Image (cartoon, rainbow, N blue to C red; front, top):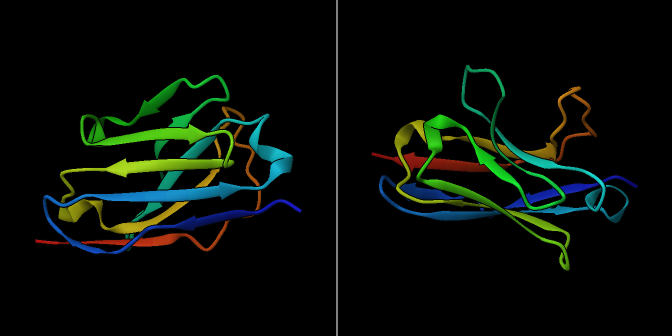
Length: 117
């Protein structure tokens, strides 16, 4: 069974930090790049960061220098470390496959991040 479980979201003041966790089911973790995505109210889903099976990571320009993604292979977990949070980072954050073909598995419930000014 394919499963993605996100956690770690919270209400935080601007300038604060959070670490999000995504536990990925065994059937897909070791053979897939994983991405963190977010959807802000009234906006489209957007990619935030990605991590390949080989450990190559990337973050989008809007969070560069503030966010970092990492994988713990032993725990089948992908983390998103978020520092210097801004109100515009407020969104529901999801993890899923990262693929140039757009392949995804069923989405998890996501985790809410709210940044107050």
